[in-house]
Length: 70
Image (cartoon, rainbow, N blue to C red):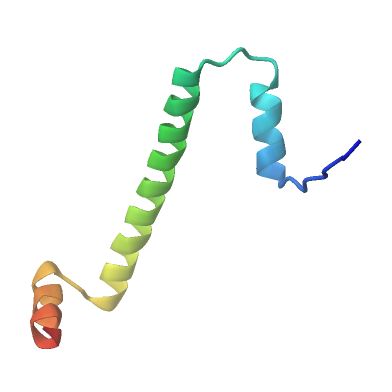
């Protein structure tokens, strides 16, 4: 018998526990994936907003930078 061991992170373990006793359809799996993706998109967007504020960037400034490079 070939046994493979996987090291799960704590969040992965919690997610497996959460889903462990539920009957989940393929549709629900897709929905959950989209929800998680959306969560990280929002986090990335907020992080980018913070970076723009810290660097004093604006849409006009980005256009100036692109025009200088192109």
